[in-house]
Length: 301
Image (cartoon, rainbow, N blue to C red):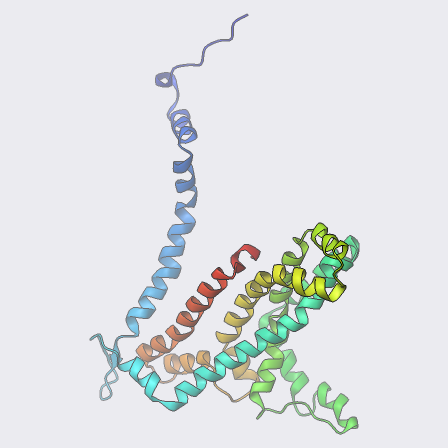
């Protein structure tokens, strides 16, 4: 019994012809599939960054307050020459680095226990417990910490019987370090957990069979293999801390890059200078991502 021959392409409907043409061209399929999201990325994200960068070369007339659409490096010269802006940049990068290191030190043992020690049932509960803080509003968490850290708050209520006090409003860097470390900790735990979970158990067993002790196995096998995951987590903690402006406004009087940008846009009306200052974290993160890519961090995302 012979099977009926396929109908010629000329007899197919237009939709079937298009489907046949796409089936024979997988690269065209991929291009059409990615056209919408990539186009949105180029227009909405990269386009806004390009506009931001172009705005940074304009300036505001000191007499009229109008924007002068003449390209120049006035805003960048002001950033470099003014000490307060250099201080704000250094403070922002320093606290972002401190938060990243703190989260890495806290997250690694938690992620290691989840990936290598906990049972599958307990591991699931721990993942839920880590994700639960992300379900609540960022503003709610910031205001909750503001209540905890205020002079008559719960923290001082616990510490004062022992003759201690929590960081006050003047100790803004300590407050920001503490709160940002809490806010962004889940973003460090999850990449490290994923990286540790991908380490084959056979490597750890082979290290033990060759006579390595637990600490040697951790230092020479686990830590090098998990380091790209730590770098991947640091991308989130570093960038989120560096771009934050709500927590500094609510918890202290110190200035971050985000606060200076906000004040120049909403209060001073100096949009070009705000755009120039906003490019600083962009360039910092570009360098950071290049280094992270060379360390293999993107494989752990």
